[in-house]
Amino acid sequence: QKEVEQNSGPLSVPEGAIASLNCTYSDRGSQSFFWYRQYSGKSPELIMSIYSNGDKEDGRFTAQLNKASQYVSLLIRDSQPSDSATYLCAVKTGDDYKLSFGAGTTVTVRA
Amino acid sequence: DAGITQSPRHKVTETGTPVTLRCHQTENHRYMYWYRQDPGHGLRLIHYSYGVKDTDKGEVSDGYSVSRSKTEDFLLTLESATSSQTSVYFCAISGPSLAGGPYEQYFGPGTRLTVT
Image (cartoon, rainbow over all chains, first blue to last red; front, side, top):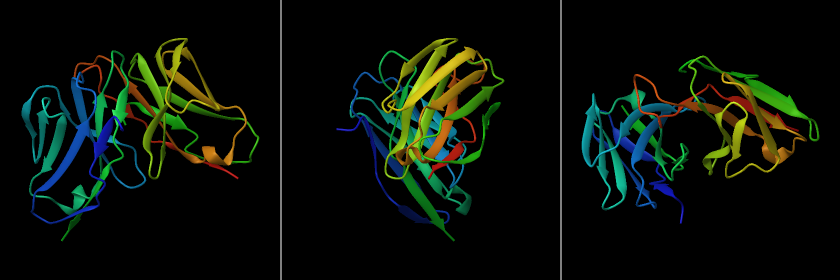
């Protein structure tokens, strides 16, 4: 079992809709969770960090964490064509500073 | 890119030749990482460093070595490049900062390496 798993996608949503991305992780002791956005040909960019159960909102992005169920999700509200990218889920596992990354979910927002 | 540069940005080399990629940061962060990214595999950690002269292996370290003689520089060396090392290589940094937590990683722009 991979440490971090994401819906493989691709996910296609109409402009203005909500895009919902899911991520599950295997290490029950994980405490830190991150979402990165990666445009084609570019490097990953950190967009959200979440450490506590519940929701965290930042603009049109909402991260949701449920440690009991071992999943973290990302909602993109009012999706725009500029949100078209691959979204990577990352989880800090173990006692060191390493992150484990999911394979990513590609989102396409159609006008 | 959070004060991180990588050089070169693109390189084509022949099988069997040594290659060194450089990551340079101006953030004074303690931790530095080298990843490779390939279709279908996502980001995979090659090596990381937790301080000057302190390095450790990641999940795909075979065929790679690293060195860190200064806080700001982290070098990745392919001793004898093979075609399977054709990939995009990303450097990342992390460490306590005013803006974020110590585990947040920030990535450099990447190096596209082709081994022919």
